[in-house]
Length: 174
Image (tube, rainbow, N blue to C red):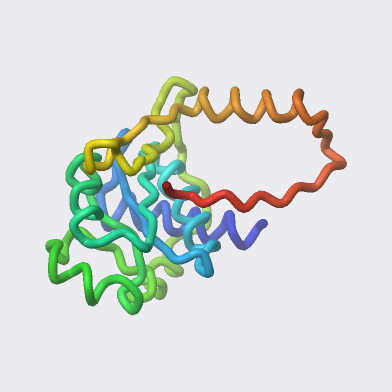
């Protein structure tokens, strides 16, 4: 967990300094499931910037990705060039990307010290996009309080203690 925390801190510094991410900015990310570590590090880094993460499923067509990016107001999309960049840059301005596979060396040079962050429980943590019954994706904003309440419910409902271990496999995007 220390390596994950250190890397997410470095990525958060990169987002703040290079991409100018500020409180309440939306930042999207899209990775295949095999890149779960990059997804988790991105989520943590975005939250450490007091920003809102927008997970996008990797199988969506470029037109839907563009709709989600536009609707959410995402500053940019974190993904891997060698997997998504070649196709998506045909449809989206290249400045709207952060290609982790191309920037990893620059990210690793950042400090591993935690940022001072100030998210409140009432702040949005992420926006989950549904398929949308009208054919247009619809974003649902989830606050930190929503996450805490869901976690507290699960602990009570299932009697989870600090000695329990769980494996969760829900997708990060809809």
